[in-house]
View 1: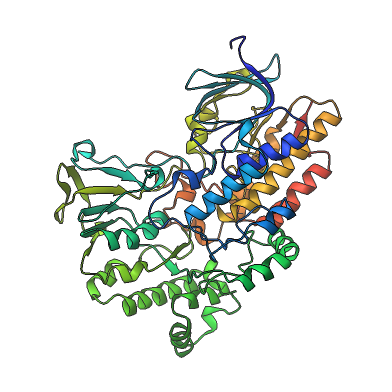
View 2: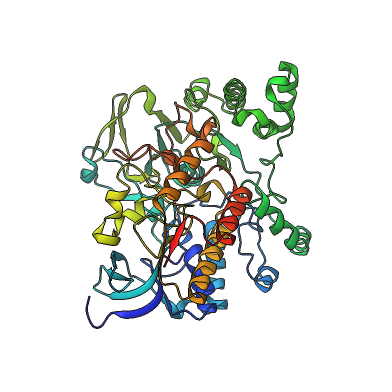
Length: 538
């Protein structure tokens, strides 16, 4: 560490919604804080993910900060579920309103963070050679930040332009007159495919696994709806914090129907009537789909029937019909015109279950079903979720222990907030917290508030270090796994990024906490009110 190292109380890695709020909160407490951000501006996932059709799947009046009443009052959302450009404008507005940029170092990627036990400080290095020394290190790196590009033979031989939805060019892409191939039909693929199909001469979709998707029913947010939301914000926020997922969908589209019935108690006629009345949204009616495998398979067949009703070509409908894994084991996908896209004459669906990709050649993609010529290639292949961006950094704790080695068998933490052996290191919405199963901003605010209160408690009591006890961490990991048992999220046939199954060689362990926002908040509050039970403070 050089003499030129910047001395700080806290370093925050990432200037998305987590990092911005952490900066605002800790700065209010009088701490010297810097945010280190790899991008050229704020916004996090909404800065990087600019692919066509990118949109939030939580109603915009709920996917927003609650810490400032004035901010809630002054910002006007235009749609039920906002698109990426509007969310990025919101992030920029927050940065401007609270003067955040003066304490953010942009175009700066952290390469290493080593804890010095003698001084009780984190020594942080950047790829550009910058050095920082800090009492606390907060990782606001985001759960879906490290793009995943699967290794395919010949990928570097493709002659045309190649894009990844998670690193989309900021100037946009014009696909007019081009034959485009897209690999992947997860959330980003489902959003991008309808928009790309409208522009491209021809779009070939390479589908690895068909997804269960529900129409968003998105629409403009009327002035009356917006004013009613603002008038009820206090009630909305209170309900969000007690809820399972951190949202109440008070202004959601028709995909959001509160479950009140049990599917196994319905007749075939009743199910037909529900599908006739509500289409895909009818699947939201039933409580037992999430926990009962028999009910879930019945819902899966309802879904496949609805696909057959909407997609004209029977063979294409079958290709789009998921089989072999339950509804609810993967991230729910909310779409706008996705299935209708496959009724277009300029769209071809290649079901890789019938023969996979063998190699990429300069002019296209070879599969065991044949060769498909394309001019441009898009990877919609997701992320190394939850841990990818964290483990990209060389993080070393007490006695030089590597976090990568500590997490070799899967991520372990206490409350998703801290890791044993790594004092004064906090993860915002890290593995072991509700995070990706929730409205992220509600979870971010809860985490940052808890962390800031912990630091304030330490300063008030002249404490310099905090880290979880090994037994408390072990018990929490066991609790996370126990709560997930019996849900569709951990079904034996489920291969989701919640489990790391999309990354070859990654340990297969369920990473988020299923207990819900309300229960998790109560647990965290109980821990802190009991003198930070399970943490060692010294």
